[in-house]
Image 1 (cartoon, helix red, strand yellow):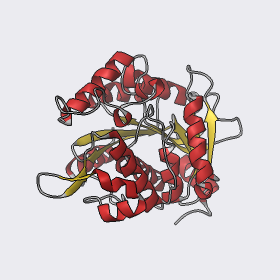
Image 2 (tube, helix red, strand yellow; image 1 turned 180 degrees about the vertical axis):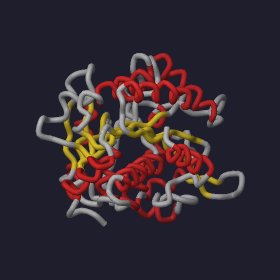
Image 3 (cartoon, rainbow, N blue to C red; image 1 turned 45 degrees about the vertical axis):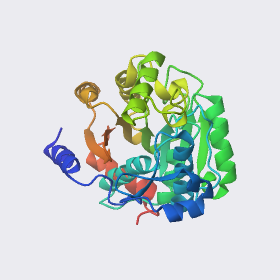
Image 4 (tube, one colour; image 1 turned 45 degrees about the horizontal axis):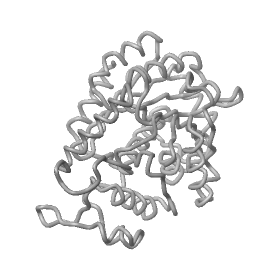
Length: 331
């Protein structure tokens, strides 16, 4: 890792929790959120300091909070997901996109390209279609969103149909093969400015259930009245939660595949939930001889995650890419 990247990592670890452009700094404005989603009102409670909050272990409350945030901050209407799908935390998902915008700016003389000319690939978009919705709203980007599950894509399409202003910049594609991530999704005549992914982080269904149980206990739900099993915000379809070999195996597969299409994507990226996986991920990137890699620490509350990004293009090639693709979309 270059000295510059090491400095970036130290700055992120020691600095603010959310990205400076993130809309969700500070406490939630519940009066505004309830105006956007009145059903949230019944789930308000006070924390020990007497401040308004919700029970983040209550599935319906978490989903309603997400709906309110998406509507009030991003203009996303009638967003909903089935109970069996993951309920993504909006502030953290927005953070990922803001750091990707910085990444593209680094290839573009410090200017963030903000237009539909930017074409992003979301690997495993899920039923929520969260990254494309946020990216289209915040930066005007276009998205191709892939998933291996027909039902998840059907729900995502319903969301897009209800939000035609954003939906026209988002296309959905079924990944027909469980053996590949990029092949079968990227067409021969397509190039993407960035790819993003929130990979499954468990190695088996049993490990996923155990992880959900730990989260449940951490939220002090053990022994209290309520559902016997954590649902919704701790649930998810199999492909969302686990992959044989876990998060590391999934990311190593992504890295190997990226090396077969080095000029198809300017910046490849993925979230990494387990810091212990970073040394092996760096080794995999070194093995495929990437030109540059970046590791960015992201934090939200007590949760810390990492964004790993890599490119096979040198500085001159990156500048040429930006000039060719974003010349009319720089701001």
